[in-house]
Image (cartoon, rainbow, N blue to C red):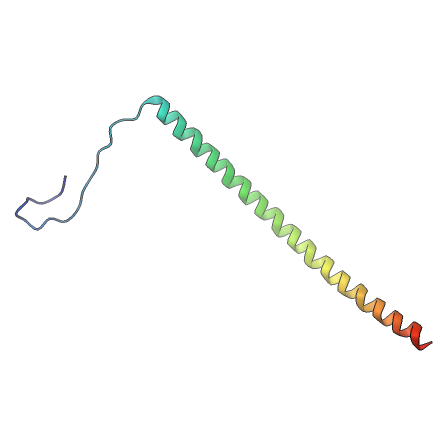
Amino acid sequence: MACGAENEDPCEYFFWIDPPMCERAVQVILGLLRRINGNAEEVRRLKVQIEGKHEQLVTYEKKLSSYQWKEKILWQSLIMS
């Protein structure tokens, strides 16, 4: 159905009426929605874990850089002595 008569300028608005769904279709759709919501929660949880691991990685990279610098200085000291 469209608003306005055929001779009038229609507003190009259409509406659609779906027939009622059977109980099984409703159950299937609700189950799928629960699974999607569960997956979204799992993705959120994993993103938080990744952020934590990224922070750890940055910390370890800084420590490694510091140790490499100290090793370089120790080698230079050893060679100079």
